[in-house]
Length: 210
Image (cartoon, rainbow, N blue to C red; front, side, top):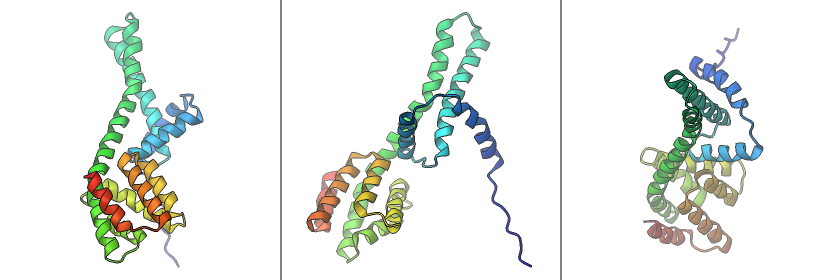
């Protein structure tokens, strides 16, 4: 008889965290625009799982509750400014942290972009197509620039799934929010449309980024 495959279960800590955060996040009335904007921020910070939105809003509400409880225990309910200010600070603290994480990740991607462009030029001049060059560069940068390597890997997966190259590159811009990436994607799309040399355009853009 065939052996029964073990079922994959979530770690106990993560499962408990999801159970705790889900009702907390649902307690905050959110519009679809708020959820969409927050999801875009989380993606730019490197968190692509949809459940991360619940974690984020649950953390904001939890931090506000912790701040309120701390003020109530330390100074009681006499100081209305502390009762309003400390929970408010706790509510907005996860947003400040998320913004800081986005800036740090964008900086890491920006620093790795010139090396990625140089490697792409070498691959293209060696005879590889641009799609294959992006895949090879993503593999080569896995250890030195993991954030950029991860994004290039996603671009490759999208193109393999059948998305046009221009759409996959525009998605790269949305996921990173880096201005240099946006300029590069515009150059690649224009080069592909006009049929000009990709290697020359990449070399010029690499010099400009450096």
